[in-house]
Image (cartoon, rainbow, N blue to C red):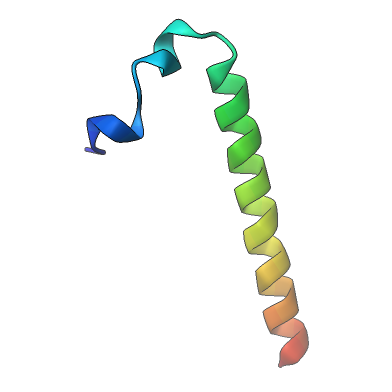
Length: 43
């Protein structure tokens, strides 16, 4: 169970927040994939 401060109350009230969180997840996944590809290229 994540801490409450990780999910602020504004996350439910503002309909724009889920889109921002979704974009943040996409960016994070893209960054991880980029790091993995660079790591594989080093090998």
